[in-house]
Each structure stands twice: as structure tokens, then as C-alpha cells.
Image (cartoon, rainbow, N blue to C red; front, side, top):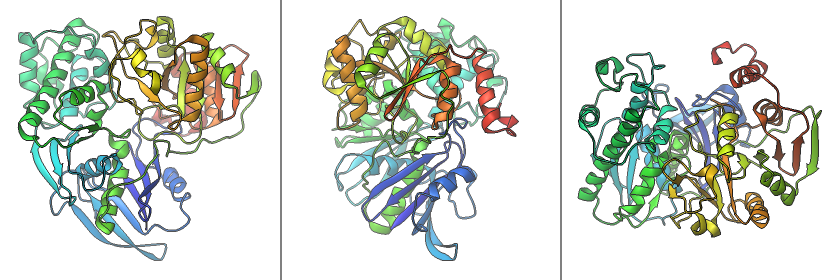
Length: 542
């Protein structure tokens, strides 16, 4: 039985499962291949995903969304009876099963299906994202019990902080920007470690109990944080206080109500908050904690597919690989000004140790938003100047941290949390003072660990770099134009390398070094030039 699943709305994704082997075939995200971040599904991505299957699927599954998606979709909320629709459809003359369940369920079943815990093991599940903030229990018979809503709209509240302080956010009452929570995570590290003062507590008391969506920025026009500026110390202090208050609310509920010691599954966009993830591990309330690499909405299509598989087969565990995204497109490129060599790991390691910044492309792209070594930018981890250069290449704010990738076997040499983190979803304290480029202002880093089994080529680069430098750690940041998903074709990679200032790039077995100087012009001009080339009539993307 083949299942093809669609996630509507932002972070549009199409996933396919082989239910007979309980295995993920692929998960294609609409934003990848340099489309705007958080894109919805397009005809092009539907055709690309359909082209991977050799026959019409046996099951078409559609996740629910706020406004529905066709007459059969069941909406956003609900896990009880009535939160799914089962029927039949005719596609190209063939009858297929149709399945739809709520967006809330997609998060639960995505994290359950991808988790490493054996079938039949009861689990707790936490779904916290823009709108949901709830705990559940999944028993050995795959029955889901809703344990309680801790907070309405936790992700929305978190993003609202940035909008409140940002003078550039001028819409008084509008959904928050999807990219802002990550910026609040970075800025909260600049906050002072102390109890809330009167202004901070007043904002917390207003924000956390509210169930209003969307919040109105103008309701806080008299707040001392209104348009104060996102890097102002008073705001970074607030960001830290609110971050702590949100987590503490969920932890208090868990401590009181989740007392059986089951493992915890975390899903939703708040699952990308690495500080919160580490704190869940350290609560010792659970036998283990699992966060999938596509914990945000990029994993929702997988979750709906798992839910459909559970309905039709009674099974809800799948085999999967984090590199199950789109294959890289080797289109024609102009090799003028390029020196091309066969891939030699010592050659790449020497270039990195010589402070060159290298794009790194291998095989299919990662699922989820984190670059995990198949669509990455790599650099040596030793210099603050490298941190500044990488943020310049990425065309993003200087307060944003750069993540490290580390040999799993060496993790304890450089970081304090000796627990594998293959999906870059946990904070660690940096123990090695040499790692200046990847050490955030509060002394933490969001490290990815790599084993030979997980990613043999990235493992070999790290091993070669360690042989030359003594350190099996590199900077690892995502290979993408600002505001778009991962670069996924050779021509775009060459355009990016020349425009943004990479020194070279690797595509599978070939190492390309640039001989000429990078192109001039602002990053926004370069990005718009690319968009005009790829989408000549898409002025709305500017």
C-alpha cells in the first residue's frame, strides 16, 4: 500500500510512505530549490513528487488546516472521534482511499511514527507551535488521550515579542512573521539572568494567559517595549524572561500530570527551540526525549501519512532517513573562473583550515529546516571573524549564532552534553575556548553530531579536518539565499557562490574553487537578480 500525503498552508510538503514496509519514500518541501521560505504546495512540487511513484497511490491523505483544504479536510484542531474523514476518491480513473485528519494529529503521529521507541511502548506527546500548546498520552493500543491544554498560541506569543519591539513591524493586528521566533531565541541569550522586574512581569501577565489570535500590537502602544528595538538590552532581558515563563508553565503542568515516566515526544515549531529541548531532557521527568528533525510543520505531511497508515494497517512506526528530500539537480553551469578537482577530503580540509568558506552538497537534501550536512556551508570554527563573515554571506543579523557540527565520538571534548544530537536540536555549553566562531554570547552552541553511519562523507571531512587542526568541529550553516529554502541545483549554487562570496563548493564528487572575485552588489540585489532569472514574471516575490 502506497500513501501520498499533502500538507496545505505554509511549509507545504508532500510525503509518501510504503505502508507494506512501513518506510518513508520521500518528503518534498515546497520551499526547497530556492523558493521563498514557508511556501505552500505548488503544481510543480506535486508533479515532481508524483513522478517519484510508479503508480497511482492506494491512499491519498490530506492534513487539516485552519480554513480547510477542499470539502473533505477536517480542520486544525482535534484528536478525538470526528477528527478524521475516511472515504473514496477517483483519480485518473482509479478508485483510491481518501484520508484526512487534523493538523493537531499530524504533529502527534509524525513524532510518534519517527520516534525510536518500540511499537507498543506508551509515550507522552507535547505539541507546541503557533496555535497548539497541549500534552497527550499515547497508550500501547495507539489510543490518544488529551491530557490538557497548557497555553493557547505559545508560538504566536513568542513571535509577538519580536514584532512588539521591532519598529519595522507596522501591521497593528496581523499574524506574526514565521521567521521571528528564531530571532527571539538568539536574542534571549543576550538577556541578563535574574528575576523579572515590574515591566517584564506586567508583559508576562498580559501575554501568557491571552487566547487572542492574532494579538494586536497597538494594544501595547504604551508599553515600554513598543518599538524599543530588538537589540535593546531591555528587550533582550524581556525575551529571556518570557522564554523562561513559557517553558516554566509547561514544565509545571508536566510535573503535576505526566508522572508515569514514559518517553516524551516533542512536535511543533517550538520544538526548534534548542534551549527548551535541553531543559526537557534535564527535567528527568521522562525516560527519554525525542524531537524529529522536521518537528515543525515540515513534518506534518509525514504525520498525516503515518496517521493514515495507522488507520488502514494498525501500525504507526516507520523507517526513515533524514536525507529523504529532493535530489540535487545537476543542470548546466558556466565553469569560467572555476578550478574543478576530484573530491579529496584532505584538499577540502586544507582549504577550510586556510579560512576558506565552502558550500557542501551531497545527495538528497535534508527533511526539516536544519542543514545537516547535505546542503551546508562549512568553515573553520576558530575565529569571530568567521562568524561575522558567515552572517554576512547569509545576509542576516550579526546577533544570530552559527552552529557547529562535531564528530560524535569527540562531543565530550568540546561540549558539556555528552548526548548525540544528529538533528541539531539541543543546546550545549561550549567547553573548548578555541571554538570562537560557534560560541554564542551565553557560551552555548547548537551542535550537530555526526557518525560515520549517519553521514559518511561529512564524517570524513571532519576526520580530515581533525587530522590537520586537532579539532573535529566545523561551522555548519544552511546553504540558501536569504529568505529561501535550500539551494538545490548547480546553477543556483554557482550564482550564490559568486554573489555571496563563497570560496568554493563541493557537489558530490567534485570540488570547485572560484578563481575570480565575488560579484559586487548588495545581497538583496543579488537575490532579486536570481529571482528574476528563475521566476521572470514573479515580481511579487521581491
